[in-house]
Image (cartoon, rainbow, N blue to C red; front, side):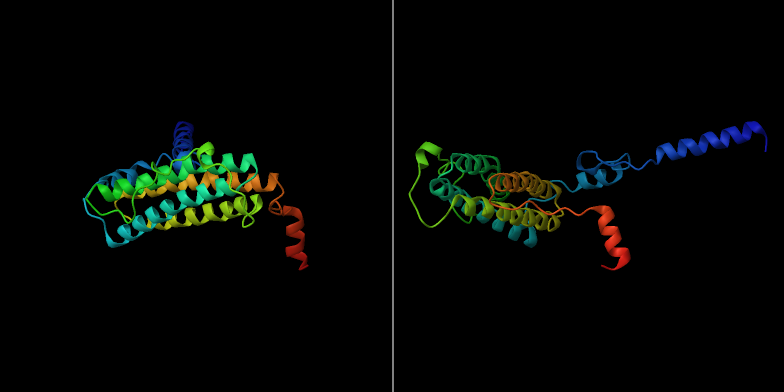
Amino acid sequence: MSSRNRETNTYERMEDTMEHAIEIGKPEGRTQFSGYAERLYEERRDERSSLSSSEFTMVMEGFLHEWACIGQCNLYIQAAEDPEVKEAVLTYRHDVCEPNLTEMKAILDGPGYMEPQPYNAETEHKSLEELGTLPNAAMSNAEIIVQMVFGTRGFMNHWTQGAGASMRTDIRDAFVRNWHRANRWNVAFYSLAVKKGFMMPLPTMDAKGLMRTTVMGG
């Protein structure tokens, strides 16, 4: 093989390696190869007006879950004595419950499905001043925040299941948006719980120590 051919082949191999570089860390996990799946994904957007049985179930349950959560948040705001806890729950209601419920309402309203309960994202859109504080011995600040940690995790699971239950991508996208809202607040409430001493931080595992334990058997 001539030196020129060797140089050409080396260049082609380098070019091939560059074209097939493994990409991580980009928004939504996109890579240079995502276009193929995204084209097919977009073809299933708004492909029909009706909901499948699995979509209908997950949307109805999601609607009811967020509908009840708005009232629950208002009760937590009234029960909390810590101003920071009140503010966190109020902000969560604005950032998660209200838009998530509205996403489900829009899906139901489009084809004309009946909402399972009256939409309350606006009628129960109460401020801290309107809700006030109600003396109670039933619930502490710690219980409120710890419940929100696990409650948001439950919401994340529901939206994950909902996305998997739908092959109509405009509906799947709504579930994914709802998941993102719950996801950021799961971490936010955990951080607040640890900061205030309501929860212990998750334990860490030293990689070298774990390796010694695994290899040595104890």
